[in-house]
Length: 122
Image (cartoon, rainbow, N blue to C red):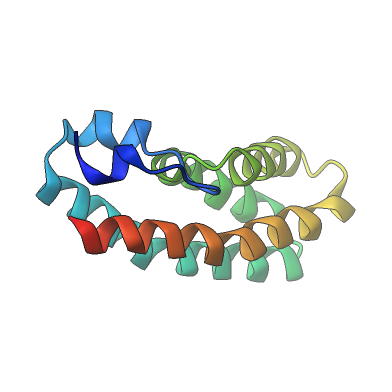
């Protein structure tokens, strides 16, 4: 049994990452590396599009983030992103988007820390 499956995590679930990488440590490193690069950029875009009230682009970024968040396995981030994508598609309840982005931005550092630990063990 590999080290990361022995651990209990507070913010991540590695089931999807393990399935997609077929247990291959190098593949996991590549996938996590991409995640570390993409997530801050995507969060930045979300904040920008929200501030600009560009709901179409915000929805597009949230849609793209769905697959990225699958690798994280954080239900709070996944739910916030999914709800924001659904609402922003039709510019509904626009006043709630900043709160969803806050959830993503505030949870990401905790998620990143746990994922970094996994990455370092690979």
